Image (tube, rainbow, N blue to C red; front, side, top):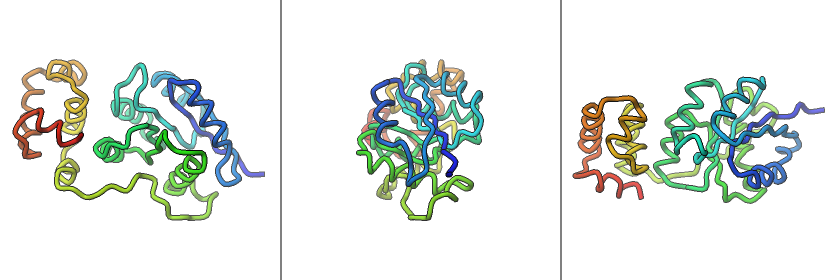
Amino acid sequence: MLTAYKFLLVDDHELIRVGVKSACPEVQGIPIDWLEAATLEDAVRAFTAEPGIDLVLLDLNLADSKGLQGLRLFLQTHSKANVAVFSATQDEFVVRQARALGAVGYVSKGSNPRQLQEALKAILQSRPGLGGRLPPIGTASFPRLPATAVYDRVAELGPRHLEILELVLSGCTNQEISTVTKLSLGTVKNYVSSLLLALDVRSRSHLISLFR
């Protein structure tokens, strides 16, 4: 009998969790033991308490985390975890930055049951030590995205610049960014100015428009 995978599903909507578990009780004949969490805090605690979790499916909009901050915080605590983003957005910047932050895949909430199973299968096959139970199929675990000059420049930014860029794009003011990152207001202003220069944009609004 095949050993079951152990997945942690993190989403604050119970109906979504029920739907995912019902749509995907197994991956190509291998059963999935689904664990659940409704907040980032609960997810971090569950991963600590439950050994052998193969994959974390993490929603980006939880009550106690904002956007990709949740992914960053989870991986800061559990750096060895295999975390896939579970999101309704297919925004190019979000997909690219999730990958840069260390996500192992990107699963759309708009997937039908077959697409969900294919996405999970692709992620498992992309991870050493997990995919050995499945034959290779060569499916990408991230959406295929076009190459563009602005995203090539984003890929060259350091982790702190990426963090601040994400907060700018989510609509945070410099003061709010200062509070979240615990950097001084002057330092935040310097980072924002260097972002505008690096991405060759004229203003904050121009920067935001590039990712919409």
